[in-house]
Amino acid sequence: MVPPKKKVTKKKVTKKKAAKKAVAPEKKIKAIKNAYTKSALYAHISEDTGLARKDIAKVFESFGDIIEGHIKSRGAGEFKVPGLLKIKVNKKPATKARKGVPNPFRPGELMDVAAKPARKVVKVLPLKALKDMAAK
Image 1 (cartoon, rainbow, N blue to C red):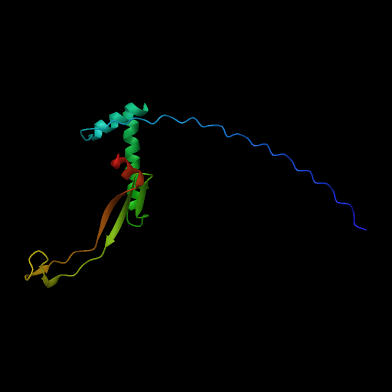
Image 2: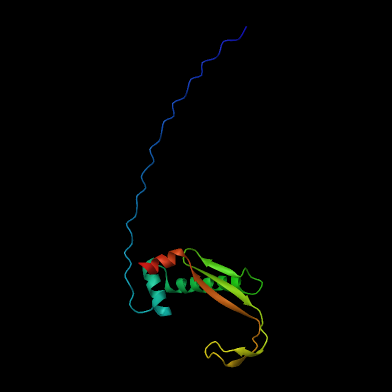
């Protein structure tokens, strides 16, 4: 004999309506005709945020120290400012001196190329958000 099957009742799942998030109106940013000096930049940021100018200066100083720690030798070698830019260090090897190289600017002439020591080159690359800002 087979035991009778139990009835399985399905629970009703109530769907919760997602609360609509209040979307803040987009901030209108004016074009700035002349580049800011250091003190003008600090003044503008302090006016915008309500922080003291000295605090803004400390933040920038700390920011510089963080970047230095990242790009220093034995550091990470790169630093990202989220959404804006990426700072990275490329290590270029030394090159030997060469004689009798064709001159690319004057065909038919030969030139000498001087030796260059090994060096580190800092590159600043824009990220997508910065490119979008420039495109507006």
